[in-house]
Amino acid sequence: MNLDTVKKKITKISGDSYETLEDLIAIEKRIRVSVNGKEILSLYCTPIMVKELVVGMFMTEGIIDGSWCIDRINISFKEDVFVDIPADGKISIDDAVITSGCIGGITFPKRLKIEKAKDNFKIEARQLCEVFRKFQNASSLYLATGCVHSAGLSDGKDIICLAEDIGRHNAVDKIIGYAILEEIPFEDKIMLASGRLSSEIVAKCAKWRIPIVASRTSPTSLAIEIAEQGAVTVAGFVRGNRFNIYTSPERILNNTP
Image 1 (cartoon, helix red, strand yellow):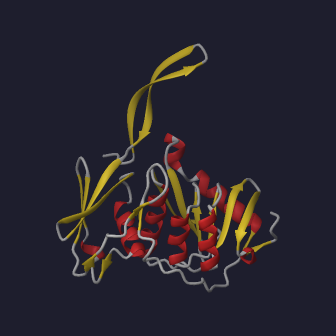
Image 2: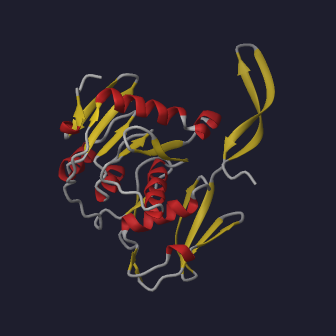
């Protein structure tokens, strides 16, 4: 079963030409997340890398205060996607905020403790541009449908993991969840993003002390403040061989690629 796209008939108009054909459409489903059988939240997403999404969100936002077993998460794909997490800890979602954007994620801003990143990671500007080109070319679901966001984790040379989702926050959570599950360290990595760098996305990266966050668009003012607080390097408008550095430029060598 294909979980990311479905074929639908469309009418394509080009000037005076009308054509009926099948096109690939990105699938959107609701995920209903339960803890010990009790539903606590739901969100809409692209139903791939569901475990990574849930792990990334729960670990970043601290939704469960106490022990829970990642290996025992149960996922059931039906009309909705049902996820159940066995846990002994206390559940708290009282300060949940639906994040900015048309398909918002969920964040708990009061819980995210931002500490300054301490690393020696550096990358040449031209190398960052090359990695970002690889990232954009790897976004197969976007290239097929044109309606999803992408996030990726890179070591400065290769794309270690790529995630796509209708929600840009979800894509970042999937990357974080993947890295946690695969025990990939964050301190020498770059988070690559296709969409706007909002405060929530930069805060998620700062929480895990990811040293560089790069996007093809710009950060918001609050995202810059959070990046400064966490000593995170934010690069925006990465297009071709150019980009802007908004915070902590010392990690990027030869700032003119």
